[in-house]
Image (tube, rainbow, N blue to C red):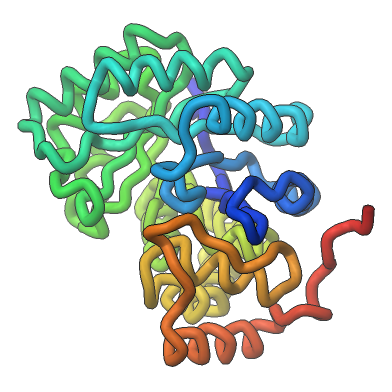
Length: 304
């Protein structure tokens, strides 16, 4: 069997207006830009989409809008998760009703469950909602690592088809790739390690910097998947300064600041996210200049 999720998936930002409502025009433009670049899909309302600030009706509206704008040309994956399993199931059911193609389910955070508790959480969601589901392992945000044996056990469930690996532990990533079934996708969740993960036998990435350079990230991943090491490595080193600079502060602050400087949205964050520190902003803008990504060098949003 072929892995369901392979290639480049952009963890898309959620643009806001000055009054912190959703900027629907900018959101449509961002999705269309990803479609035009030929990425394999977008993840809506993950960490990069400021998911903790979006709930209820607004959550459903954003997913429905993304499905409509993608129009079946690329996959739409919904970010789902929390530290209450029943609420996560309810949210997953809401997402499924919008017509999304899959779910990115984050590891329960803050209450730091055991590995048995984590496994029970994922299995409960997988049993409740019949959609392809991606485990999201990001201990730096959740406070707990999903261990290899837990991921391997979860991969046996037919609805659990992938993991987004953001542990940044290459030893663990290799173990997960080697010990899970061939049709189970291992996707990079750390932009600077995407090349390495694909070279080790992984299946692609759920990326942040593809908000800025979707064609470049796709070029790197596609080359790696077809075994063209030279082309993939060259793309990796071109993108590496951007991958590092976009994490000088908490995601998605730098990437949204960059998108605003590129003229693709306005710089607006829902608290507790906030504007970048001045020194870091200068570092980011210098990198954008070096990458040719300043306003006037990228295609702007379509006029009304």
